[in-house]
Length: 111
Image (cartoon, rainbow, N blue to C red; front, top):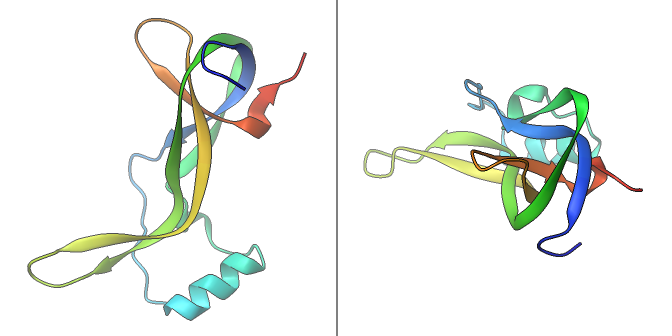
């Protein structure tokens, strides 16, 4: 897919407003849970939203978002840091002049 292509989609990713990403697990335990697909939903920063109708827009950009991870306290000077477990490639799709929708490739409807 290229910039300027018209696409249709019904689902998109939306950043969670409040999410608990603090962790008392070790990094190795979190990585093992992620490998077998049993990482709790609290570790994802985005949620899937299903729109009621099929939207149509134009691809305006590509981004890599920090999809899964956890917060750690790194000390007094750095504060809390977000350690990424999984990144996801999303397309920025504009349906109007006001906003972008973050749409992964698997949510785009093929004609």
